[in-house]
Image (cartoon, rainbow, N blue to C red):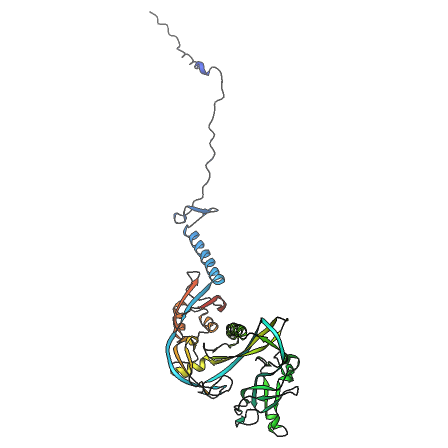
Length: 435
C-alpha cells in the first residue's frame, strides 16, 4: 500500500483576540544613573556645606565663642559694683571736768567760741496816754586790744564815742586780753547812752548804710598812742543799741504787759534756738544749755488812744566747741584724725564757774561733761574707688584690711559672672552704712 507522504506545515499561531486592535504599548523610561562623587569614609558626616560635609561640633564652638564675646563686651560696658561699708566705731564714756579758753590757739589748749544772733517780737495791749518820759538806749559792744600783748582793764563809766559822735558809757569794768598770735584781744561790755532819746538808738540795719556808726573810740585815750590801739565795735549780728525814746508815757496794766512779755520771751527762745542751728559751723557743737539769752523790753508806744505796742528784743549768745578739739581732750590716746567724734550733742553740759564766767566777758570756762562720745571711722570714698578699680574680689580683701576705719565691707558686682571690679572708678558706688 502506497503511503501518501504530505508535507506538514505548522499552522500559524493566531494572536489573541485582545491584541487584535493594535495599541501603543507603554514603556518605562529610566534616567541614566547620576554620577555620585564619593568622599573618603573619614570625611562623611550628617551636615553638608556645598558638596563638603561639616563636623557638628564646629557650630557649637562658634556659638560659644560668639556668646563669650557678647558677655565680655557686656561686662566691660555695663559692669558696675556697689560696696556697702560699715565704719569702725568706738564708744567712749565721757565723765570729767575741763577748761576752755576764748579763741585759744595754743596746741593742747581747748578753745571755745561765741556765736550771736537776735530777734524781736511785738504785741498790742490795752493802754492809755500819760506824761512825757525819756528813756536811754542800751546795748552791747565789743572792746578790742590791738595795742600790745598785755591785757588792759576798762573801768565802769568809761566813755565811748560812736562814729556819729554820740557818747555812751560802759556799765561795768572789764579786762581786754592782749594780742595773741597777731589777733587782737576782745571782750564784750554793756553800754548805755549818755543822754535819752531815740537819736542814740543804733540798729544793726543802720550799719548797712552807715558802717561808721558801729565804730567807737575810747575818749580818755584821745591824744595818746592807745587811741588807735584800743577801740570798740557794735556786733552787726547782735541786738544793737536800742530802747532810747522820749515822749508821752504809755500807761498799761503791769499784769497785762508781764503776761505779754513772758509769752514773747518763750516764743523768742524757740525761734533763736532754731536759728542758731544754722549758725553752728560744720564740725562744731553747741550743747543744749551752753547759751545765754538777754531780753530787753521795748518801751510801750501808742498805736491808738486805747492800745499800745509792747515788745521784747532778745540777744542770743551761744558757746560752741570744735568736736575734734573736744575729742582730743577727752580721749587723747584713742582719738586720731581718722575718726569723726559723734554723739557729743546729747552730753550733759554744766558750767562750773557761773559766778566768774559769762558768754560776754571772755573769761576761761570751767565745765563738766557727762555722756558718751562715739568715734566713727572716716573713709575717703574717692580714694577707695580708685584703689578698687580693676581689682579682683579676692584682692579687694587686702584693700579693705588696709583701712583701720572699716569694720566690714560687702561688695556686689554686676554682671554676676564678673569676678573683678570695673576698671573705671566711676562705675564703683561706695555706700557708708549708719552705725
